[in-house]
Length: 243
Image (tube, rainbow, N blue to C red; front, side, top):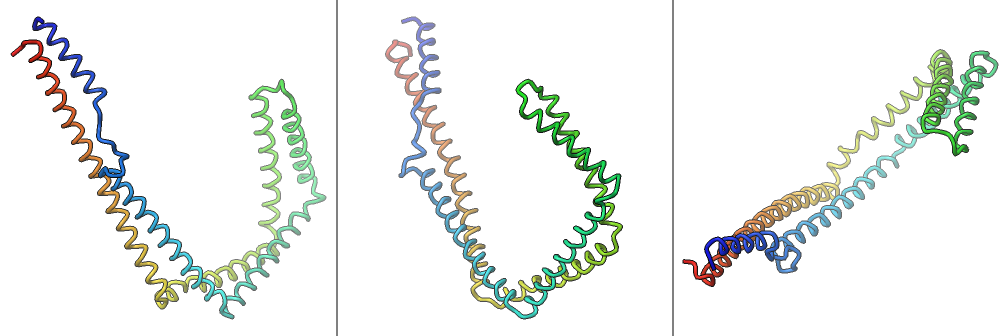
């Protein structure tokens, strides 16, 4: 066999082995990558459990806060204020019923909606027609909303109801903000926080080890591939009588 032919054969061997070389099975239960991935999965499972326990503990504390007479009174006041605000807004909108501008806006909206709906049932309608109809409907809806909002903003009853609602919600938020104070006094909540912190650290460490295992495996596969290519080349050259 001449040197050129041998060199060609060596090149073929190198190509085949470089592209199809057998690799370490990452998914093998005994492989380091598999084991590292399993540690990540287990750590993430523990973190989910720890977070769930923390949520349950937090819900218990919130339940204690919401069970206090002061909170119950504030919550009832907020519900009442919300109801009064909703009624004031409804009344402001209803006051527009006979306004010509509002009637025209409603008519425009209904007409545009009918046009949009009619196009939906037509198989010959183009995408441009459907888009234009949808845009026109949106504009008409916005026109109605602007008139309604103007009436709401200018209504003294709505303004007063909004102020009362804001005060009621502020009181409720103030009571809800006492959660950290309760949490600091709750051993179960503090323990759950620690469990979450520890589980988070375990996940981070497991992910770091997984990354290292993958890098080590890639390097081992690269070295193995290079060695097999060198061995194959040496064997071919010996069999070809090339020194």
